[in-house]
Length: 219
Image (cartoon, rainbow, N blue to C red; front, side, top):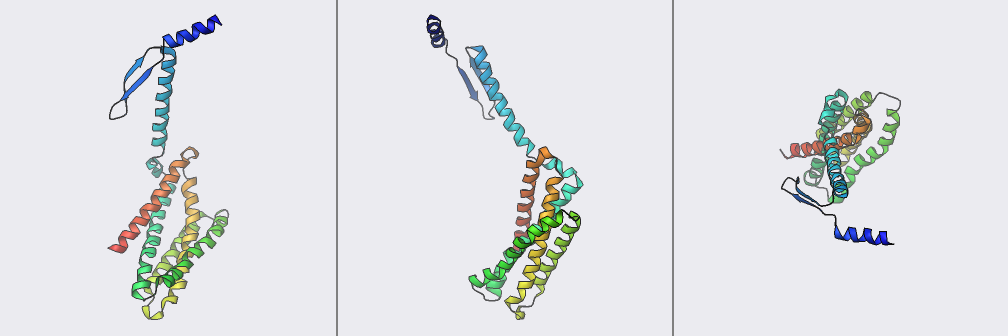
């Protein structure tokens, strides 16, 4: 008991204090240490925690992954296809609503086949990617998407709004056939420890393509 009391008295008499003052760059400037062993452990833990955060942040930068030809090609193809998809999704509602005089309900119904076709084709494309070359599937999907978009652009207004439905479904078929194998190539081209960075690049490619597509429509 006496030892415990002495230890308690010692802890009260010699408190441990680690004070860290940060500058504008969040770097430690002053460390006031009164009891070295535990204080150094606390400082070491804080520094290791900051190092882990910086390391994790730097590992998400996937620019070095673009050196691989397959990864770079998958990113560029994803940007191109999302640009076409975004351009169609931005322009079609205006064409149907303002050009053909349809209301909001019928405009949405005529665009819905695109999404439904993508939802139906995506699982099939995933199974096909296990059996056939992803390059062949991506090329086929990209060409089909381009044909569907060209068909929608060349349909004369006199044909009526329902003439766009086959074109929209064709574009959805191509987009769904392209997306799954291309994403698979993009993720598998990166090392396993860089899978998070590859996923981040996948999202960046999608947003870049959608932005470019919307900008092209507004020009």
